[in-house]
Length: 332
Image 1 (cartoon, rainbow, N blue to C red):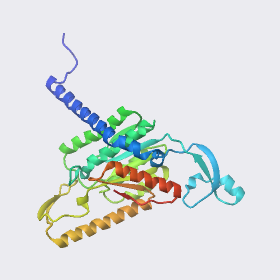
Image 2: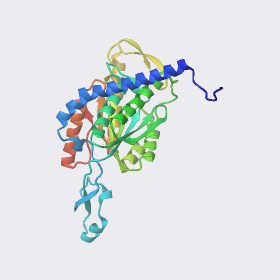
Image 3: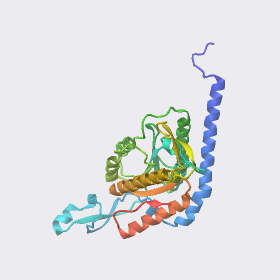
């Protein structure tokens, strides 16, 4: 009997299944390695600081107190304020459960790394660790994956299998980047942040994981995202992006546009100009994040992930205790 079902060639189907199995197995091994080498160490070091690292949105009214300069104006109780003629805010009991989103910039520039690891690997390690920490406490995590454009939206869910799904999506994007043509123009981080604001209806904790090498104009959408969500910028960088060593005549290639040029790093004047421009960009970036009211964790490609996360948790705990409005970036 003739079959009306179209069947894929056996060889092609086998190759596809083998490739998917290899990626899934690699993701499982990567997560297991993170659980043994990073998360186990964090379990002993954080010692209850989980709530200072990632806080949920409060639901239960606990108290009323006078307004202070760092308080969220959305918590002002206008009836009490009018009655007492002094601004008062509602104080809520913090809800441990929360939804977290990872806004992932996986454009070509995150493939760079001058040492053993590239920025993309540091990004995957951070996401794997934080997602696993959150889901173990019953919280939901989701992600927006950006390559040349917004390529995937992973709705928030919980569980270890969901973390594997998230890491698999990041690995899939890395494989696509290897064969995809060079994109035209730089990363449009503003488009990603606008998409994040539109796709996250409920208040969440948002981790913007990027190297922030983007076309200008992302500061305003970031500030708008902060108005609804608690936003943490996870800034990826490589030491070679800040200062060039003396390597003689070397070719440099823009990973996002494909533009190439030769530079003479033996020229001390050139290296000083490069370092000065990099320093000015660092200052401007940190100022933009501070102006938006965003806490920042800086992750270098040669950082120890455990030490960086613990340092960040300590700084957030001090900020919670002191009630300060801003926080300096954590340079690991």
